[in-house]
Structure formats: C-alpha cells, structure tokens
Image (cartoon, rainbow, N blue to C red; front, side):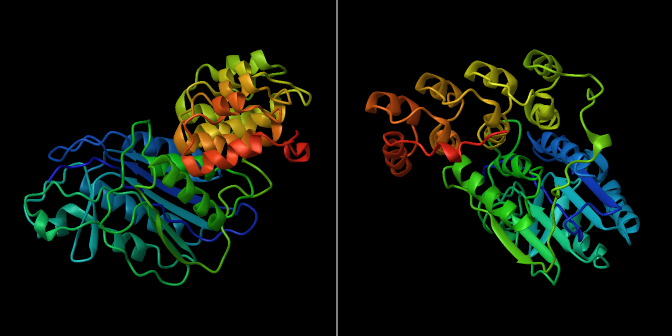
Length: 394
C-alpha cells in the first residue's frame, strides 16, 4: 500500500465566553523526522504556524517538535495538570496516526510497531487525550490524519475511527472516516491551511468557523476531501473575540512606527508564508485611513502568502484600502495567484468593487478557470451594474 504522508492535527479546547478568559493553555506538537516511519512534509510547518496563531489568540503555548512516545505522553499529562481550572486548553498534534479496533493511536518519533500489540506501548490513544481533560467544561478535537497504513499488519489497521463524543465536546476529522486526508503541495496540509485562514478571524464563533474551514477544504481539494465533524457543545467558543488580539502578542516589529505603504512593505519583508499573513493582520491598522492601494501594491503586501485560503484572507484584509472601482486589468492581476474554485471564491470577494458592467472579453479574463457552474454565475454578475454599497470600506 502506498503511504501518503499527511499530518495529524488534534486540537482540544475548553470553554470560553464572548471575551478572552484569564487562562488559555495549549500544547502544540509537530512530528516529521520519524526514525522508522516515512518522513512527513508539512507537520512541523503546521504545528509552528498553529502555535503562532494561538499565541496571538491569548494562549500560553508549549511547542514540541519531534518528541518521542514517552515525551508525548508526559506532555499530555502536563497539559492535564496545567489546565485544571483554566478557561481553555488546547492540544494540537501533527504527525502519523493509525487505528486498530476503533482506537486511534498518535505515534511519537521513535514509534516502530511490528504488530498491533506494539500500538499499546508505542502509540498515544486519542481517547486517553480526551479522558485526560474530562474535568474541563468543553473539549474541541481536530484530527487531520493520513488514512493509509504503511505497516505490514495493515489488514488489521484501518483508517482513523470516529469516536463518540460526550457533552461539551466537538470532534472534527479533516476527512471522512476511512478516507485519505491529503498533504497538499504548499507549506501546509489543505486542512491546516483552511484552519489557519479562519481561526484568527475576529468575532467568528467556532461553529461558523468550522463551516468556513470545510468550504475552503473542499475547494482546495476539488471535493476530494470532506471534513467530518461531531459537535456536542452547549457553549460558544471564540479563538479571537470581538475585543481583538492580545496587545503584547502583536508583531515583533510593532515598536516601529509605520505611516505609509512603503513602511509596511519594509516591515513585512522579513516574514514569509503564513507568518507574513499574521504580521499583515497585526499591522493593517498602520495603513492611512484614506489609503488607496493599486493592484501591484496589494500583490506586494501579500508577498508569498500561500493560496487559496490564507491568500484570500489577506486579500480581504487589504480590500478596504484598495483603489476603487477596481479595473478589469487590476482585477485580473489581483486574482492571478488563484486557480479553479479558489479563483471563484476570491472573485466573489472583490466582485462588488470591480468596474462593471464588463464586456465578455474582459469578464472572461477575470473569471479565468473558475469551474463551469460558478463561472456562468460570475460571468453574468460581471455583466451587470455593481452594488457599490457592498464594497467594503475602512
């Protein structure tokens, strides 16, 4: 069986109201360099970016890279002790995982199981992670795991198994049971990319956030991967409530006064990928209120933020500052880094700000390779007069 290296992400959270509570703790783990199992490509990137996002969301984060099984178990026990009485606890795991007889095992860097019995001593049972946190009011678990097994006893080890969830628990598998979760071609897995794009959105409650993550995931994988959630919460949870981000966790360069676009560009040069998006989000307030960015400036500010979900979120942040109406050439330039369904989603975002109505040749360039059903709808929209009130303003 061909092993498809995909990350596992497990996130466990506790109750939070509409404001940040006093104590939010996180354990974030990324494992890539396995001693006896196939190396994973994106797991460390996923863990580091999630840890950074959580720190900006007022979490006290412990980040572990390539821990062995003993360290993994010890860290979970430490999270249990640390989070008793706290308002939020989060556990994130990116690495290999397998299932046997409806039990899911997370594997440390030293795991080398020769048979199913070895999973008991060389794997961390996901159910144990959940049971460690039973004293908490709410548990939220995300699992982004490869469904193919590389083991010689693979006929006994199936894809990750769904678990029953008690009151106060949300369990989310990034792919349907027995289905393959894809690794993707960017810096992160498709699921992690979608999660990172939405978990830092101010005022976005967990349930609609999950729907947005699911939509992005389907677009990014052309429908090959569908998220499978099991939600049994009774309380709301916000990564970032409406009061905003924690001041002391803002950009490392926040002490530098920035009053123009060139200053912001200079500040962002040291950052890349998802981290650039976080720095852009933290620094967007430094743009003049009446800034009018052209398409080239927007592209320069976005830099190498990966598409589609993270880049679309960056475009959303900058849209209120763009010169409008956006011409057809500038619209095409803004959408150049998006393809397929991702291009359609980005076009929907900037649609109210575009110069319209457009003749067929211009609208064709704008729509690009958007899938047929959405392509027809967007082409029709581009041929009509825009509703300017829907174009976001600062």
